[in-house]
Image (cartoon, rainbow over all chains, first blue to last red; front, side, top):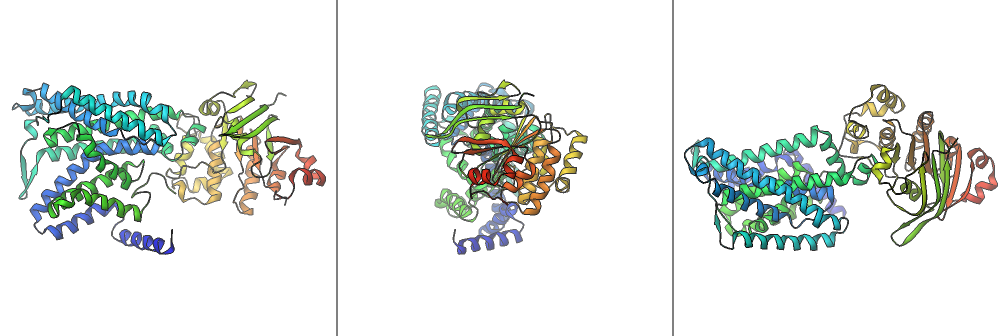
Length: 339
Length: 238
């Protein structure tokens, strides 16, 4: 690293710290967007859409981040769990028919929660199978991990096509979550509020598990130094299975939520989302749940603001965001491993 | 008395390289025992082989009479061996308290034992809630050793604890290790002869993956010929 680069990074860090540090980056992004957009109501709608999108991406990304950080596994098959979650969620919603579309809000919510639970449980079980059959033989070998997980992803997508066919599948949205609320002159989709609340609840649960339990302590330690965790007498392989199952379950949960958000899904849903998921994991910092949340919110906001301001730049904007952050902080915004 | 640890003709490879060429060693119960040797002689490999982090290709490692050669690292640790690696193995993102808590059997501290550790290393009490990455090099080493003694262990393997430490800290470490050795056995790998001489009861010199000398530390410390023959100039013979 040259002195000029180091000096630039230091100046940038000092400047960002002066405005509240990295945790306030989404706020700073929102303020810049407000100045560029001009209309407060449009800005508010885009901000809420960005936060909801960010939370759904967080669900998909948090597990992958832990899998990267703790297990050092490059799992390019993660999107298979997102896709599977979306289709299972959609199928269960379809089965529950009147529960979901009828006028009883309690049944509506129960139907949605059942669909999300089915997707999550399937994700966890499929994750267990995936870890044992696909990942376990290739620990410590990144090249083979990439090859085998990409292969498994192709197989999984073909299975989805085989079971659900190639045509887009409509996803019934629970009646209680359709429509919008008008808050202070700003129209807010109810489903987005629900997505934001669910993402926040999952974040709080993950935070509590990681910071208040012995299991969480072990996971955080394992992200930093697997070998030392073993030398302290803990079986890291058991921790790996647990984290992989949890990561896959969260991806499936995110997929189910995203399916309801999109309304129409195809087998390519997971792969399409993975670009954003990888960006979130990288800019947040491997193995960091807080980093994943921060990264996901930044990506969600950026995608929505830029899609409004310069539609053709929507995806590229997040690539640029990732490049800028990596040039500034090569280990991400909130890396789990303190160097 | 039977040795607490015994290595018989241990051969260990790392990738295609053979590092240990038949190490045999018997560590008696109690006190500090030292393995000396130049860089690359096989000191760290010996400790990592005992700990199961690298598997012996042949030979045996016996701990309290049981063969632990093929056991996994967690199983070896659970039998009562603690390991302080050369890089200290501190979890920088965790607090001092969390680092120590991980080394307890059930996640809770024995108050009497914790007070004793704080007595040996007062800095640990002072920085109890601080993240470990914020500690100095010496404090990190203290934390690594504290973690190894927060539960009663029968054997503590310590890999070059004085590396990069200031002389004043090294003197504190000597006092600390003497106190720790009153209740357990310490197998220490060192290049710093001053530190090793101050603590060691027995010594083994390793070179090119073989034990080339073993005996009492007093014998080695008083014999300039032995020092010159086995330790040459690569050691910091203060």
